[in-house]
Image 1 (cartoon, helix red, strand yellow):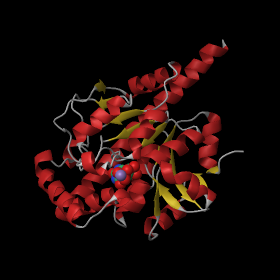
Image 2 (tube, protein in one colour; image 1 turned 60 degrees about the horizontal axis):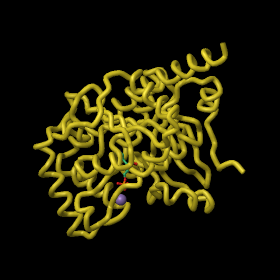
Image 3 (tube, protein in one colour; image 1 turned 60 degrees about the vertical axis):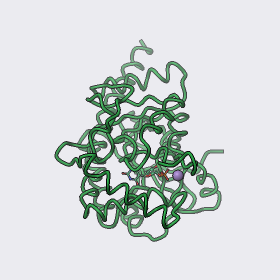
Length: 313
Ligand code: PSU
Ligand code: MN
């Protein structure tokens, strides 16, 4: 029995033709940004993928079916819907067997992308090890998914509300390549430099595509995390954002925020404290990640076609 998965006509055609496709998630729309910035960003991100020569495939769960490639009407409906479920790896099967509707996190979007045969995915920042995880045990399922599912995820690193050194360690333990794009430093979501060195660095989309294919040849499960720094003109310096993150964390502790609520709560607090600047930065970085993901998908389609040609001759 096949999983309940529906590709939009455009995505299905691109799949058959071997054209480049970039998966996009929907939790950033339902839980990561306020309306109307969320739907405007989703549209701008899809446009950035198209401008880069790839087909965008925004992913969500609707009535118990994983939809790969949302129409604009569906995207708009999701962006204004209230109390949408945030679906991660742990929720996906129940959501589908119960016929629910919800948005997909990085982890769930990776699962859906793999099922749909899509190798490249763009988002803002992955989830990771939360500060205080030594007592809360709050570690995002995104890390486990990167260890298991062969999708290259382009993000601006992990969100800076997290414990970035612990997140790097957790990724290393799980064998996930963390590849800074075009610089040595690990980016920190709103800032270009986390003060930590990235374990790996590659400077071209083609090199990232080659590494993706090599993992498959080695039979290694899991994906790659490409950490693309936010464009300079949109950056908020780490020292400037740090006190806002600290107050957001204090508020979360005081209000007893836990589990799935933590990340949306912290992002919302930082947005309010920076009077929307953090949102503008978030929008800019997701768009740029979509541009880079499209370039990787284009390189991957070209290399895959060349490999097929060589195998056939
Ligand atoms: N990137 C953003 N904003 C977001 C997210 C990513 O710029 O809101 C979402 C992704 O869906 C990611 C989730 O999987 O935040 C992490 O949630 P948690 O920490 O609960 O695993
Ligand atoms: Mn969590």
